[in-house]
Length: 241
Image (cartoon, rainbow, N blue to C red; front, side, top):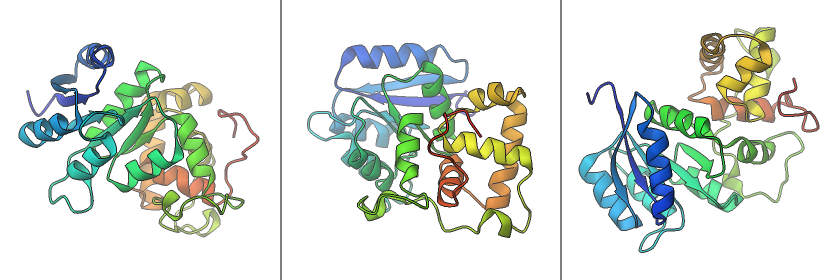
């Protein structure tokens, strides 16, 4: 059962939020909520004891906030880090930067669609990253050619300075470029599939090819690369190419 089911710990100081998240996650055939916590201290203790596949943490909790809890569970100095996914009401850049710096592999807003939550949990469980679309676009826009120089220096932790699109040893195909542009605009795999009138498995295949060609660890690095090299028109709609 452990091998096939994603075990999740939910930490939030609001009981109604924990109940809502649990209902969404437990309704998935491949997920199971194994613990709940109302404080950051409790979350860290339970996470270290149970070692769930994903720790879903709120930011503003008593005793210890979710950002510090993330550092204790997934930070650079943790020898065997856990997968931490932040879910918060507060869409603040400083929270995003600190969460990613402290080792979080995802950052979601609580008003997002349930499908985004489940996709983010699956991504986190496999060691990949997913950030809420609205946060992604704003955060990664700082990496673009005309980025805001006033942004914190750690606002761009994922680009890794890959080559330009035309300099890749194995260039991206036109369809792969279309997928990359949509990922950079914060589209989910399902939304990309609808935009391009292809199946979800086709989108995943394209993303896998892109990751290999760019040597990218996850979709956040793909998006960062696209913004950094001017592949995304900031004035275009989120689904546009």
